[in-house]
Image (cartoon, rainbow, N blue to C red):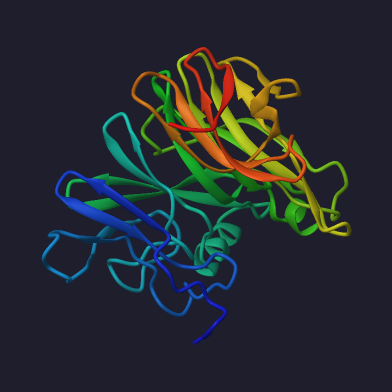
Length: 285
């Protein structure tokens, strides 16, 4: 429908138990209203057939057109959390957004999270303010998510965009807001946390704040100790990475990769965040 415009590639691969899950779609050029965006997987390395999973979504947003239809424009960022596979709802389809608006007064904004339960996925329209839910991570016995949006539609349409940290204590069935921080100038830019990285000492959130007129973005990375969320600042090396992705490691440390803005000219770089939260750049493995 949109040749050369719509993102047609595979965005994500996640092996889990006996299946290989894939991600696709485009949260900028939305087509989820017109064709179902599904949670698809392969069951065999020798069989090219891909299967769309059943999504249990009763009472979680707008009724599905097909049993396999997600409520998303894009499937991306599978995360393994305490042994269970999750999917963050990056961008709700129009039907879900309208359903939330019609079911709340004043009209609210909600986001989705998905948890694999056996052969099917459970959809939870449970993230308050989640216009975009970018990432999910398990840390210290709870589930956390990050993204952007606003609690109410009138805030969002008035240009008030917030970056969010959410917490769930019931495996994504419900989320509460830990922190939301508004862009300082309504209508002038976007604000969001996009990546999470759990370590032994702290949970790290990587994101940015943009300036529409200047066409630029500034880093807004933060560290959460379970009580307080603290903005990262130089000389902390984690404060100078414009993150494009993260990966927790089994020893309580993790990796974050992206652009190192402390260098001139800019370079793509890989950083190691130790279990105690200290960060160093890796020039080789």
